Image 1 (cartoon, rainbow, N blue to C red):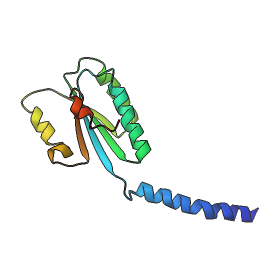
Image 2 (tube, rainbow, N blue to C red):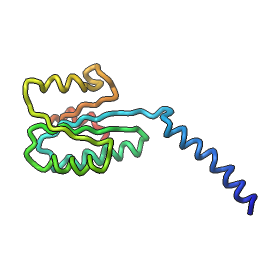
Image 3 (tube, rainbow, N blue to C red):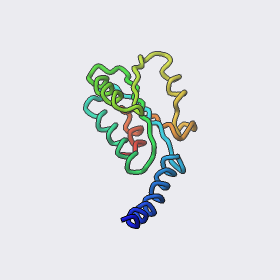
Image 4 (cartoon, one colour):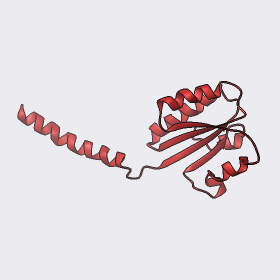
Length: 134
């Protein structure tokens, strides 16, 4: 019986070490997706779940920030539920004013020459939606 435990430990140790290396961040890429949503209650859950699935499938660590802009539907309530259950998901409400372009400039993505780990997506713009790994 002791030999069987020894053999199991011998095989389990390298597997545990490999998982430790992966979790430690060896080669893991981190991305932050900023989704600008208006009245997107019918699509927002799908976008969030698709990004989470992408993260699990590829091993890419992601964070999701949803910026609510002129939203009058239940998008806020949906985001409250997602944010409550996951520390990598957050949402903010932004009133559209003259500072709208300033907010985008502080979180630009690779298309604008900024940090390639931040992907800015306005859900009302189909070209921006194509940036998502769906």
